[in-house]
Length: 440
Image (cartoon, rainbow, N blue to C red; front, side):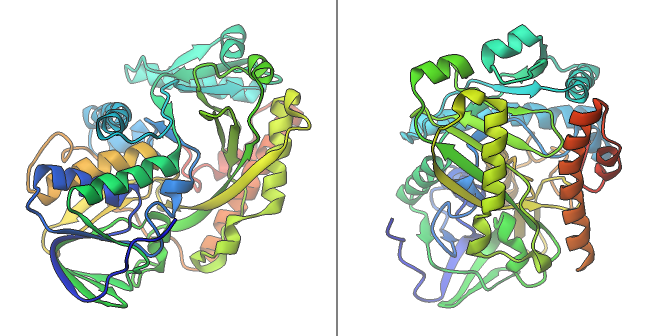
């Protein structure tokens, strides 16, 4: 697609947003709706949705990277539950805005089924549901083997957890549609315009400086490229493959009749969905973290990881043997040191931020956009009282410590899954590495 024009000269606005992903665009959308008189400019190094917003696995879920226990430690039990309810409501908000604004993003709210395919996985599934009940939550249920297979019939299935709070969608269609809607509301989007630096009331670009009352950092996995923010978030790659459209006979064996998103309770994350055109999209972690938080186009592809994802897919669904993979891609997501996403505004500097979604951003960005709207407009609300507001994660360790730690953690999770398959017991390595990897 043809990029929008780049910024040509210095500019003065009310709100400058760095990053035309979902965080930046949702913020612009809600600000423009609340205050049409505001002068809002969004700058983007590439094109709208170039990063994780356009290249994710298409889960609009209620998942938040930090646990309820972590959020309660930041605030209170009631506030943690309020955060969870806000995430659940945000799933429906994404769907409602897409419908209202005519954004055709292939959305289907079929929920999420997370399979248990080994004894340790089934134990984790049961523990997760028990933990939800201890918080008074009824939105997560434990499925028997028969109930699980009725939704998704994968090899070795013993049971599953299920929640209705997720919609499958086409991420690029959502973010590009949102960009067009935002632009139609009078927001200026300057593509091919990198932010060289962010400072109070100023964004430096190659074409000049944007001065603004408020500057919003919405850079997620690319945050480490900004001066002074090298250790704020680390970019970790997630890779995805997509099959050719599958015939109805194959889907009759696999399931996903309601286009449920799916995963299983292994240690190293995998995720998938059935697309509107009947492809199976399947992704996961496993690609290495690169020294110095390096981000390069070549890192988007790792043939070893693509092959591993395909092998996992065939192991889960033998009926797919011989199926062609027609698309493969990847990209960087942003991980804070404590695995807790945050949103905030420093009124003394006019600097606002949101991010650290750890791959759970499709819905969380929407909550961030509405929260930033309220913070920027100085309107205290239920959203601005949530425990992630104003949270500041500690910095990551300097190199080479974080390179050693993160890659050791990723390797340990892969070995843990192999260990559990062989022994039938929960991995000791996984328990030891959980604190480093944000386990909760």
